[in-house]
Image (tube, rainbow, N blue to C red; front, side):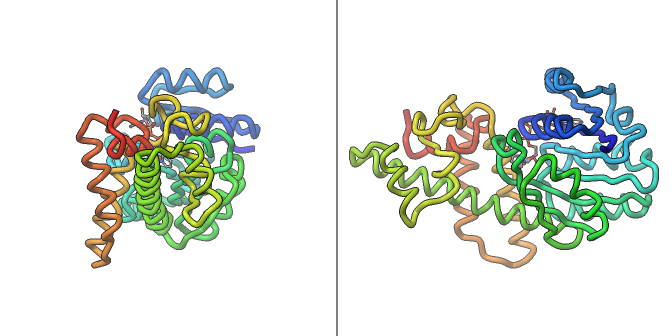
Length: 295
Ligand code: NAD
């Protein structure tokens, strides 16, 4: 079992760190939020006052932070972790960030003799709690093989997408598709409901038909259709609209750089941005339904 520092204990990082503890790892946690830390203490984690202290003596550091600027602050900023970690330490960043930011951190880490991989995840808070996340890694195969037994405690499917940054590229492609699917699913459900159909019955029909998709199967956006999903608790928790708009922005920026056309992704980005601007930035992303079904 490994001595692990886990930094960033939000909707995803909290349950991921908890699963590492359940697997028997020795985990020290740090988050700027005291509440997030205390939830992990009751699961058996050790705590530290700073990210630096948490990483002291760790064989492996894992970060699960909101966006690229947070990752750069923790690793490269003043008192950044890269300057303190001993050579050979395994460093895993599971945040969803721009591929070029991941490559920049990877290069700085490699120069210090550290073993870095980008390892963003898919599967949502449900997957984080159940330990069934998909990890989409970018980096050297040797580092990937070192990380895999640790990632196994938090995930079910662990992929190596390619070199540094490739995990992030695959992740932003996935999330662009997810945004399109969630908006499309909401649109279809609202059209059916406007015709007097029961959204639960329509959901079941579409699940068993050619429109079936992940949103319908495990994350239905219509309140009351599915238990235990954000739609059934006023869209609290889950994957926030502001994080989805961040990911759609990453996809858009990348498409511009690659001269790649993303008409559906651009439309999804505008829909989620509009929704965020209407006061929904801190709701779960399935609340995009509200654009189609105003209260
Ligand atoms: P979150 O906002 O719930 O949690 C982020 C945590 O990081 C917070 O607790 C915050 O206090 C902490 N933090 C921020 N800056 C910090 C710093 N400098 N030092 C220590 N802690 C710091 O976000 P989340 O939903 O857990 O998502 C984390 C990442 O995973 C994001 O990049 C997101 O895009 C990605 N992601 C989220 C989901 C999801 O369903 N929520 C799914 C897949 C991927």
